[in-house]
Length: 580
Image 1 (cartoon, rainbow, N blue to C red):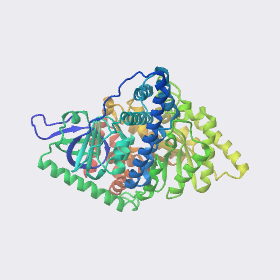
Image 2 (cartoon, rainbow, N blue to C red; image 1 turned 60 degrees about the horizontal axis):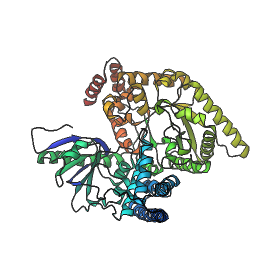
Image 3 (cartoon, rainbow, N blue to C red; image 1 turned 90 degrees about the vertical axis):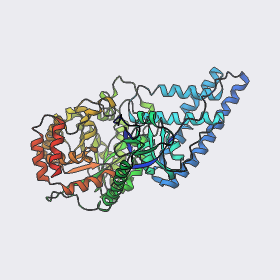
Image 4 (cartoon, rainbow, N blue to C red; image 1 turned 30 degrees about the horizontal axis):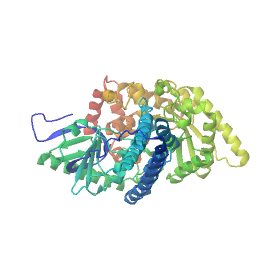
């Protein structure tokens, strides 16, 4: 917390920015209203009745969530309404249903306790896993469990009625509850739990509601009815703001809104620096609801489609070839130049579909990325077939994630060639498909010259590259201060990669949110990077920044930055240049 300890008025708290924007309102506490379920031993003849109670509750819960989805779709359109599908599907999940029934029959317990016991057991199986996708699956189960218990106990979850601009404070907020709320007077959300990639955060962004997650101290100090400001752009919560502070934040909110308007207005302008150097801005896509924003935000193409998100809400196997073919064809069709770079499944042992999940002591250093994909040849072949078929309707480039050695790229090339030959027999093969390596680990940096010679293009995964180079988990709050993209080791590594791509005359794209920071964009420009792929929402700001920068100044800055010893020194140097 960063606060004013000597005053009883205004207090500032820090958290994680989850949904951008600045909201003003009164604190409304979201307090769980349902009592814990009762444990009851039932007589043998009651067991079947308890099982039937669960089935009826599941049907009622499903109907209710279908109506919530329809209500949510009317508010935000079709784009984000799909986020509620996992919760609806969970009510038909065979694993959950069987676990509940087994608990009731084997232990002769009431339906409420059977649900609790089954849900607790499933949640416990996720406790040792750190991957964001599985945390979302954990939330799916917890959400459905709470909803079923509320239905069975006759205590439906009631949401507060907001009659004035309000900031909702909660230990956690379930995605379905947020989708169910009327956003008219919901000016902000503050929670202890959650992260920027959770469904709750995505829904908040879809509704345009500022949100700050991970703000435990703000929750502890907030009193119902207290005036507050929620700054979802910077991750700050202010209780009892002074009038002067309110004026400042009102001005910031107006400036943010103006920037967003201006950014979209200028999104179609060329990404050319002040001294005439042309850059290329591409879009990173995870989910198909983001596709309409690709062209609107000024992207030339889809620079990275993270294909594993096709299965992020499915607990079963990887999707079949036809499902993938439809998804990839939609991505290519939505790309302004009818081209897309599709990254093959970037799974690790703890993010796999449930039928292939295995236990590893350290999944981050285990069977993941290219290693997993190549070890599952039938899955790889099916995916390649779908991509090659979709490429007939445009152009596709295939990106192999987390490459650590040349043999992985060569094996991927052999698989792709074999699939193309198979499809050529049927007449379904498209033009030659380009194959590229994603540089995300230190090993790939030091063989970048070899990878560049073997591949058709290179992409830098800045999010992972920074955390692997600096040996710090970007999701770990205790070491978050080490997330320094301008660290000398990062800059030196990027220089090596740029030189390798240039020597082999291969295209190089920076994929990741590093370029969204002005100082980092300045450094990347100075290193010689000209292709940037970011989330669509970040593109207008980057384009606006590039149009104000000078590539010659950026090159001078990088030459100086590479002689500095710390990230802080590099950042200070960048600020000096940018202030000019």
